[in-house]
Amino acid sequence: MAIDGAVPVSNDNAEQLSAWDGDQGTFWADRADRIDEGVARYHEHLMAAARIGATDIVLDIGCGNGQATRDAARRATAGWALGVDLSSRMLELARRLAERDQLSNVTLRQADAQTHPFPSQSFDLAISRHGAMFFGDPPAAFANIARAMRPAARLVLLSWQLPQHNEWLTAFRAAFTSGRPVPPLDRTHQDRCR
Image (cartoon, rainbow, N blue to C red):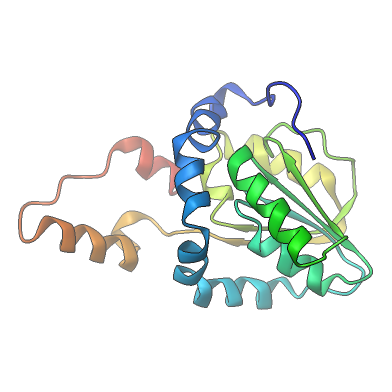
């Protein structure tokens, strides 16, 4: 699907659009296999927790390169999966991979999940593998997503914990500083991880 024109985003997510639809999105798209391998153990837990049924209509928030969207579509054989992300580069790759896998029940759209006018009460399930933690205004984003969910719909998120409780981040920071004092994470990062 071609993207025509600018993607409408909330002011809170303008920086995210700039990063993910720019160099950051290209970086992640160029390393998609490595990233998917790096989170494989967590990804399987996400998919198990989602309990996707054959007829489910699934919304994948911040779908990135589309692995979770494709896996959701494979499980929702009589349903479909919509993946949304800010990165046109990652969405291009996600589309190619869905076509390669011959998944006709996948739709990928460049959109800000915080403001996108999803059809009301349309989804049985919303999932996110590391996407929801980047919302500029989490209450607004989750209110928008909730409006799109059917009664009794499910929400399954995979997100990093606060930096001080994040073993992965702590280990990398320690390794990269090699005994030197570790600078504190900036306030913006800490706020986004809450």
